[in-house]
Every structure is written in structure tokens, then in C-alpha cells.
Image (cartoon, rainbow, N blue to C red):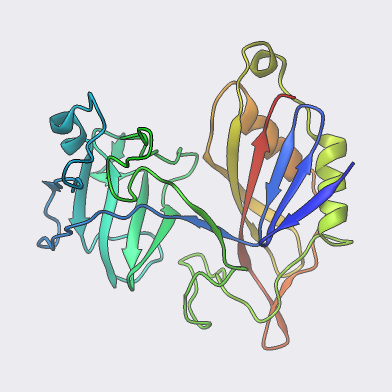
Length: 264
């Protein structure tokens, strides 16, 4: 078993499963030619294409309808200081609220899930065609590791009282290697997923209590075939962590854990 460290991204290659772990992650989707809209107003957002670099055969009109943006959307526990929200056109909504969002705040793009058990929508719109790019940046999802900084102020908390930034990050007993070993020993590739060649990344989020216990464990992106359930099952089995600290005192901390399932 080998563990490779690449730019704060820990990758463990296992028979059938590889696990990506990071202190925190957010995903980015930029759109050129952004416009501001009145609060509460839904409008279609024109996608900006580089002149002469449209992907051959792409249905521009269909892609235009794929994205809508809304200004100043009320996200759970997030102050109304964001610029825009992007979400999938036609995505399941509850009381007018999309189940998952990518939103811009202070000029930086974040992923934030505001509904339990919802799946992260995907901007799989225009694929790169040869050496050209159909849409500037929007089809290229980028996972970034920021060591749980997220560019938030150190005093900011989520609506549930959990900190997004702490002076000392929480950690699994024994550190990264021990956590990867725990996942190695407990994760099982679901038979249906294995038989049908289902692979991909499952994103789990949870809150670490002051005593290190995990709760509010959610699958925020599920790829189906039982992989999300398996990832959540193993996370629920984890022992108490060493809690996060703020100014020398233990605090509740939000934690994000991507787990990549790959058949080998």
C-alpha cells in the first residue's frame, strides 16, 4: 500500500477503491460576461463562447438554457454578501430553492449544499474538443485544497454554529495515514457498482462536535449504485476525532471528505 502526497491532495490506491482526502474542498465554475440581477429574480444566463472555438456539434441554445443565475440568494447560514448563484436548469427545487448551488462570494467560487441528502449538480456542459475549449472555464470543474481556509473570516460560522475556519484543524486519531488505513480496512465496493463498472467520487460532509464525535453526516454528491451509501456507512463507523480548536478552545467544525471509487 502506498500513499502519495500531491499538492495537499492525499490519494490512496486500493484494489478497486482509491480515496481522495483533503482538509476541505470547494469546486469552481466561472462564467464570463456575468450580469447582476435584482434580488429574487430568475433569468437565463447566456454562456460566453470564445469566438471561433465552439465545440463542433454543440447545441448552443440548449446550453444557454442549462444555466440560470440569481443574485443575492438566501443560502443556509451564509450572509447575503455573495455575487451570484449558479445551478442546474430544471434541477429539483424545494420551495423555490435549488437543492445545491455553486455560488460566488468575494470574487471566489464555492460549493455549498443547503438541503440534506441532495446531490451536487454537475456542469458537464461542453467538453473540450481537441485543443479548443467550448466554454471558458465553466465545463472544467476544479477541486482545490485550501486547508480548510475557504477565504472566510476566522470569526465566521455556519448557521448550525460550526466553524468553517479554525486555528487548529481537527484530525483523525493517528493522523492522515491512520484515517486512510481505516478507510482501506472498512470500505467495500458494492457488488452492483462493481458489476456495472460504476466509478467516481462521492462527497461526504459532516460536523465534528467539540468532543470529536461525528454527526450530521450527509452525502452531498452521490454517483449511485450504492457508492454513496457505502461511503456514508464507513464514515459513520469512524471513532471520535481530535476536535478543532479556536483560540485554545474546542469548537464544532464542518468537514468535507471526497472518496473516489475506482475499479482497478
